Image 1: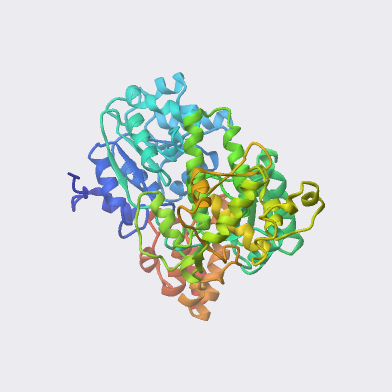
Image 2: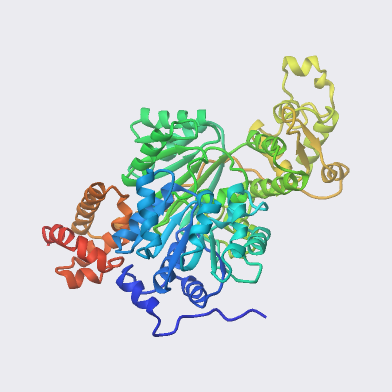
Length: 608
């Protein structure tokens, strides 16, 4: 029997702090029960979608409870941004990390040891040294919050060995509640996290994985440079992330966009740290920048106004895909996730799994299953959001905001086509790749086919009624449906699975989507900001964004930590005339009222 979700008592100081410090009138869905549980002294695991307000779930209790709240975070940039935002809200917060010199870190520690801080951000590597643990044991810790908690689990796709040491925390700090947070964890990963962090028991909250504001679309890759350029050009002036599989492709993507007048920057592990930091800073603080990146540009990228994430290659698995697309639309406005993929992606990903020296056979089997789920997502003829959410154990009606819902593919009986393809694979010894099988089916007269005498096979020319592109699509869908297997150790040779052999003998059925490689559907996203504001209000919004950027540069912080776009839109619409009106704007707490009311009111007055 499930326990009722806890709630905060009417006189809880959490409500006052929510308004006075953070400037919010109410909690977002799912936040209150998590915060109430932490304030009751319980340990909690919270799975909450990106952009749903996980940080507030540990920051607010840290201000209500007496003592120091320790926040464990994997990335320096994430720690620095959150601390900068808290300071602007008037919160005594600091971070100790490797990017700061020793004197700065020592000063931060002294403030923590002296009881001056409410929140201290630290990396797992620095925390789990014996010296740091001993020093913290002498302080009155109120809470330990662990961000990106999925990194602790070997069952998850983003395991980090330095995170595993956090399993010692319950023994080192008995009686101190632990609060673990993540946006990405399937059932097995959640159970593993809870077992490691909550040996005495804790509560789990899964508030859902759906990001309904993000439109989902997938297309076959045929000319990735043209496809990328067409996509980005159709979204002028918008911030986006382009994920590529290799460093070389990342550089090529950035150069292509720059050559065509688009402001783009590369980010990958092959760049020196100063260049990476500089490129990330430009992306985070300025509008309309496109970042071409490998997955090195990952956790902690909390830029609210990323309007699209474009995958030029297939991600490693469903969890990775969900994490990466979740970097779009964190401000709640419409955003897009668009992916290109091909059969070569699948082969490469399977090869990476097999070459992982750190994984045993069980781990490799799990990773192959995760990849299977992503391939099925790419080839599905049903609502993509349904497929994505079902992987995480959620059900949903068709979303109306993916390419399949908006432009439903035509599926048809492919039994004969499948048998012809499977027969061609079998007759050639189950060792040739898709390109050669397609040539045989289409009756091609190539030197290779003549040399191998494959022009004499019964399968040669049997598929002349279909185009090469259709046969490529059918072969991909036979792989996705488990009828064909890719040889990942060789050159992508195809072989029959047990199900494929049965289908070849006439047992079973196969339906395929003829338009699997169709072009991306037309954009469905409307220009919301333009629709929400009049012409004069839109001009004021532009002026407020310019002011925000100027203030952010003066303070050396990302623009969104000054005010989010929602706050600026409210200012443009309401045009507050004095500090009383300004205090009513979403996201304006006491500290921001004190520090920013005057310059923003002056700019608004110029438009009144």
